[in-house]
Every structure is written in C-alpha cells, then in structure tokens.
Length: 274
Image (cartoon, rainbow, N blue to C red; front, side):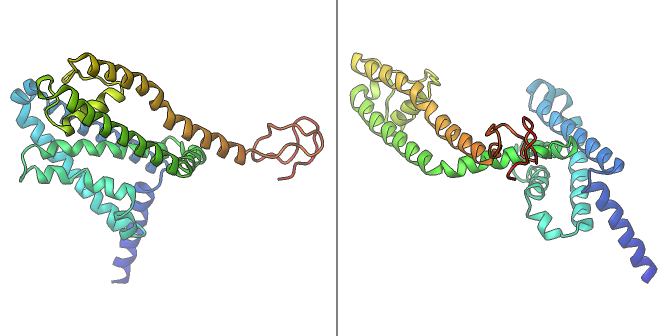
C-alpha cells in the first residue's frame, strides 16, 4: 500500500512539474503544445460560425469540438489532481479561464449557439507570457495597475460628467427632433448622444433639423477633446509612478539615469544611495 502511495505521489510530482512548470524542457514543450491545441480549437469554432462552412462541414466541426472539450476537461481534472492546492488553482484566474473554456460546449446541449462561447478559451493563450519568459514585464504591469488605481477617482468623476452630458443632450434632442427623425424615446436619444460623442457615428439615427444638427456638430467636436482626457489622467499617474521608481541621482556628480539595480554611478563611479 505504501509503495502504491509512493508511486502515486511520484506521478503527481512529475505531472505537476510538466503541467505547472515551464522551466523544464518537458514543461516548456507541454505549454507550447497546449497553446497550439488551444489556437486550433478556437480556429475550428470560428470556421464553424461561417454559414457556408457549417453547412458542409458542420458535423466534422461538431465532432472536433467535442474532442477538444473532452481533452480540456481531462486536462483540467488532472490539474486539480496534481496541483499543490486544488482549491487555490480552481479559484485562480487561470483556473476560472480553464473551466470557462469547457462549460460552453456542455451548455450547447441545452442552449443552442452557446457552444460558440468557447472562444473564451483563447484567454488561455495568456500563458504565452510564462512560456516566452515575458514575466520580466511584471513590474511594468504593476506600475500600470497602480496608475489606474490612483487615477480611479478622477476617472469616475469624468465618467459621471460624461453620463450627465449624454443624458441631458439626449433628452434635449428628443424634444428637438422627435419621433419623426428617429429619436423615438429618451433612451434612444441617449444612445445617439453616446455614439456621436465617441465619434463612432453609426448613422442609424441622425438629426434632421438645423438646431439638432448644430448640437450634433458641437457634440462631435467635444468628443475629440473628451476622449483624450482619461488617457491624460492615466499617463500623468504612470509618469509619476515611473518617477517614483527611478533611482536617486548620484550623490557625487548628481547625474540621474542609473539602472534600478545599479550600485555605483556609471558616470563617476561613486557609490549610489540604493
């Protein structure tokens, strides 16, 4: 019994090193193969959504999708079994993505068309950051997250201002244009104001009166200036975070521009205050 347990623990350790580790040759090969399978499975779903291809190869696509779903289901169960903490993995970001990648196919048995949501599976391609050793950009990702967090209040104030503007202008256009020009309700008019303010301009609704066209022109011009405001807010916080992370100037020559892990000045050789 003890020998069987030892073999099981050894198998779990080997599978854990292959499935969860990208530092070994087998682990790296497994991750690359998994990414290729994910890409092919999503491609099959995309091709199946084309009416002409579905009419001719629908059964083939359906069988292939079930094959991929069974494979990913087994792979998910193996991850739960060989992982160091099954609960932590199940509720982690990648664990949730893994289970969401297989659920739509099973839901397709009850709800027609829901199986096409397996395109969510493409989120598993984010593992490419681990495979390609791009984790060194984690610091930049944290800096961007911090910039978004620090600017969230100003962004919320800005969004509230935009919301107020589109509601007021939507109601105004409903009164000015009316149902004759497609502004059948205030919600529809608000939709038009959002489309116009963001300079999307679908053209499904357009003002027909001179006053309405004048308001639309002003709204379009405002759209160009309003769109850049969130970018400016986040950029300022990102620049401030980058400045905070930058090393202090050399205490001897007072010249900045050193690497974060530098211990001596690259200009005069003096020791830095790290």
